[in-house]
Length: 125
Image (cartoon, rainbow, N blue to C red; front, top):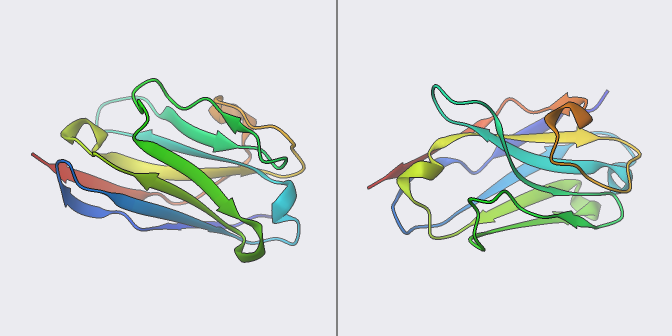
């Protein structure tokens, strides 16, 4: 079992920044493929960013346009999502996801077996 706990969400003005964190349990975090997804009210869950256990980074969601950066610290068993130049369309619940023993990541939510509870990001215009 892998437990994931997100943090770092909150209310921010348009143009501002937030850094989300996702702390994972388990002894082999360095082998986990990790991903960020988001879901806005009334919309389907969509892919944001992902990184494999090998460190590869799957191309970001189209809407990111260079504003977000995914990273991980294996020693801390933590994945991050630095979000800059936020706008109201980024308002959503952001979820982290994990799949153990995967060198490569995926944009497909079904690829990941473990999910966090989500953290709310609200961008005011």
